[in-house]
Length: 403
Image (cartoon, rainbow, N blue to C red; front, side):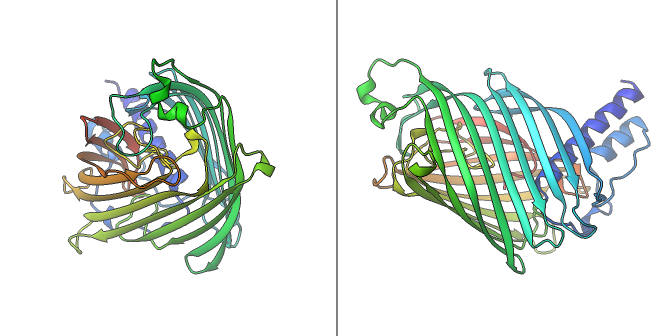
């Protein structure tokens, strides 16, 4: 292996860690005390190949946009192997404003899926406003297994569809770390093509009012409290967000319906003098009234981060109400912080049609490995293997913590 190849590999690793860091960052980060004496992937490559590497500086983003582009590989149960091109732009609107980011990724998967995502968080000069936007375009394939958390893994209906999502939310600082705001959101599914099955009468999808094209368009009311010491990899603190969504036929929705999402997270150092963390996550996605289109119903791994449901394939459980909880213990394996591990357990329960009760609780559990890409931002490569019920299992690879 040549020294030039080592430099190229290092550049890819550091750029990838920057991409994960900046897309998640929503406030200026303090100097992290635990970086002294710690190592990351850059230090490892430097030691192996004697390449002079300039250590990453904390939060060097200024008024001039800082742009990064990197190719990468990913893996999930739904996509299998994926080739990605990821990029981001980071900048400040004023010398002391929080870091604003625009991040995007384009992916082609082993299942012939194509996905494009663009996420932005633009802060005002005085940090009183945060404008958060998301745009997604998918040419996708996915199986559905029916409604409710008592559905059978062996009864699946493969389908293909095109998916477009757009949302823009403005949050206004009320006091301290408390923000309130609202915005607009639209989800559009087109060319929905379920594969032919022998018994349509037994299919939850065909019984639910299937359509070739669906639109959900409406306004949102949003709130946020965030006291975490880091939005990328928190050691302590609390996070709570809510989103009330009202979809209206006057705005082009296929049907009128509304929903509520409650996202709550808590991080505790355990032991208190260490950087090991006991983390809790509660994600509750509730249809309050009306009948959403089938593909807009709450579902496993269809939360914004696509992480709620390790151990199951995306879309494994779907229904009008979804209650999800997870606990994870994060610990260091190597003293220098380069290698870490996690153990996690989660559980979810979903109802079937709107107005029906929650069904059986479906647990999952598993171990994970963490490889530190950037010791200043605490960005890790996350490699997890989850086990669920009915033989569900699978590998999940991410840049950054799952919550």
